Image 1 (cartoon, rainbow, N blue to C red):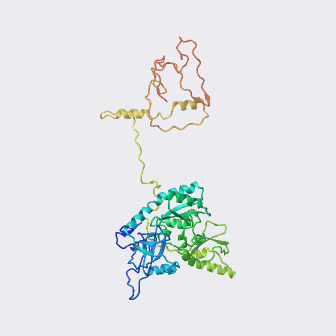
Image 2: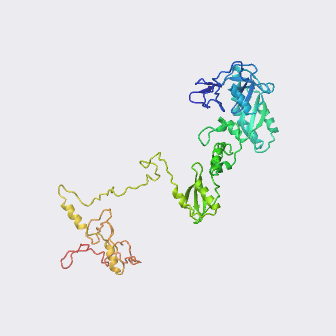
Image 3: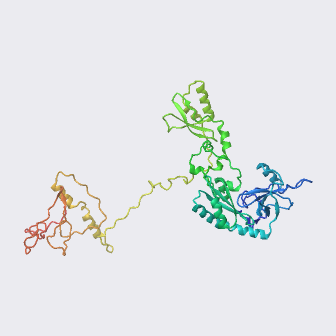
Length: 498
């Protein structure tokens, strides 16, 4: 990780040329800003001989500069190890190292402290990079071997020594693991010295790093070095919901940031009465439902009236509690709630309704009229400059609103209620023909064919009997199927639907 103007190439910060002291904590993990770097030491005082060196991820150790090398933050140096040498990067020099050693309780013993050999040469850096490139492939292979041996452990990280002579395996396990057979497998497979080191879940998250729910890098991998115990009481004091998914971090434990503001909440709660304190009034007993710690407000409601809350200040609650102890009557908490006038400062105005959740659900009313579709009469024909013919046709068809079937139903059953005329449909009307029911004769349809069956008064019409005489035309006995012609008196058939 690096800032926009600074990056690391070969372990040496570049870009801003501040050697890792730019103050953005972007060059290295757990970077400390050296605010004493530009200050000169008094005359006759020597520079503090200890330096802080960081190795892979978040591992840091203190070393003694016995050679009095001119070291600065960001230099790659070769240091003493148990066997061979290691390669690391200097993260802190000068008087701040004295403060860090005192804070971490490290004794200033030159004999017991590891020493710095030299500033790393190019062959040292090349060998160190070559060893670091093997770590990812080795971690995958090491996990496969642990699974094959049915060991309940997780290999989280592997770190090679600078000279490539030893590999340290960091693992996490809930119980004690017998990994003697595992070490033999690793030594035979990787051909190097093996060291197993168990770490906790918080240390694992600190070494691997990640992004928290706040959107920033994990505190344990950037600046937090001491892990204090976190309990659920810290969430209760801050009125947080006890949801394990929200309170737990990437390590699976409670978030360390729950302790950051706990002291401020504890100081603010000292002036609050107990939340289980009941208020006795003439109207009933009032119980606390909600608390706003920093505004100093408490919400009470009567026993049984759980939806009607009253807002009180801490001073008002203390006054009511004092009256209850003195056995003085209290009419109700409404009187105290009326005295409380909360003035809310408006820093934002909802001008165009952009905060309304239902701003897209509002329907148009009143002023705007819906457009009606114009219905066109498909049976009318336009003529050049003459619309009287179309007007006459529409006037003649205006009274045809009821079907004839409804008239026949009403005649057959006089007690049936009259049906209202149905609205005119947009379907194309059938032109008036020779039949009284408005249907045109079909020349392709044989005479005497059976019409569609209809139900009248709940009874179904019976189908006509088959014609025994095929020579005789069918349907002669049916009065309805006889062709209509001129009547004996010479009058034309009545085609009026009325």
